[in-house]
Amino acid sequence: MAAALGTSDRMLIHYFGSKDVLIERVLELARPNVEALVADHGGDIRSLAHAIWHELSQGGPQQPRVRVLLEVMTLALTRSDQYGEFARTSVSRWIEPLSEALRRGGQNEDDASARATAIVSGLRGIAVDRFITGERARTDRSAHLLIDSVLGTR
Image 1 (tube, one colour):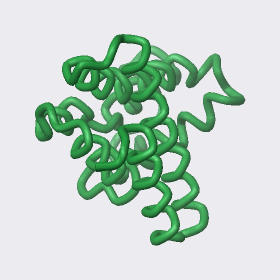
Image 2 (cartoon, rainbow, N blue to C red):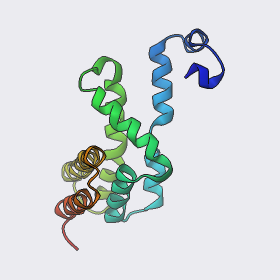
Image 3 (cartoon, rainbow, N blue to C red):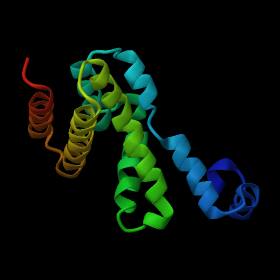
């Protein structure tokens, strides 16, 4: 990273105070912008769920950020002290907006939270499957089935 920025590792550590703080800042900048995604879909819960799938699986401009997010969340399983807080915050940043949309749509708080968790966590797992296997058709079908199962078919 230092070379790409035209400086040295030592100067980066000096500027940020520690390697851990540097990593935290980089990860924070790399976090996908979920708030913009939610704003683009207003109160349409199904549309938002499909947009979440699109961001996780195909991405567009945020795709590199999504891959970093998925990698760091996986690292948090074995390196909780270093990546756990980032992973926990990332989980809530993806689940909370969908949960709030479900509450506005009439779900009680517990059901909204459970449904949002099922959608976001399920889609995240299916996205990892897609990146590992490259099987787009199967993972797309799985994602749509998950969304329909949690939200009900149209």
